[in-house]
Image (cartoon, rainbow, N blue to C red; front, side, top):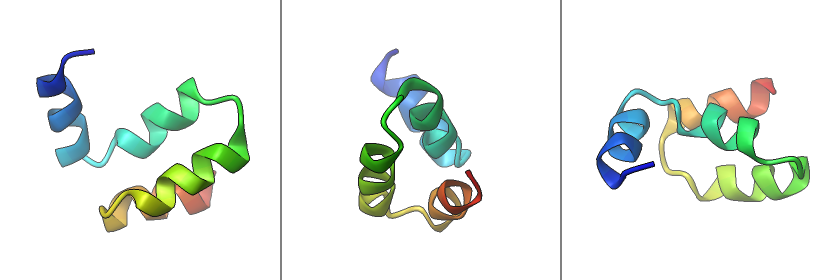
Length: 48
């Protein structure tokens, strides 16, 4: 994954769903999602 595509995903609020699909450790994902400043990403994290 290139930094550009990551930036595009972040802008579209897809970072949380991407991390969720890559991370098998849900507790670790929740810790990461707290650090994400995007409210949309936080909303996606709480729905998982």
